[in-house]
Image (cartoon, rainbow, N blue to C red; front, side, top):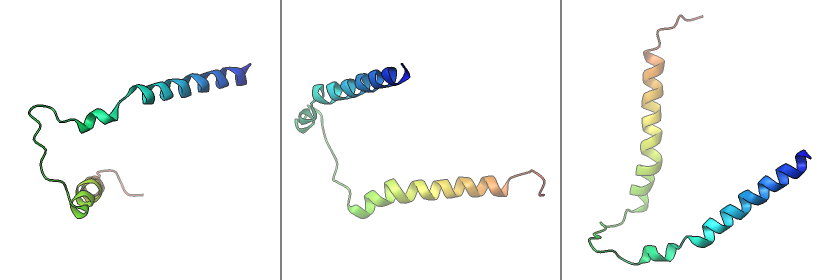
Length: 75
């Protein structure tokens, strides 16, 4: 009985995902709306810096502050 429920849940999830993908229309993103004023695109270096390097540096800074300001006793 457990496999049957799992199979049913998987079928419902797959069906829902498929319907959502079919109902969405990404082609409408190509049509410009009134008031749209997109800026210039980012270069590869700018994209990597913004979405890869900056979060890694921010994580390292926060982790470093936590380690330095840790008040627990050393064992």
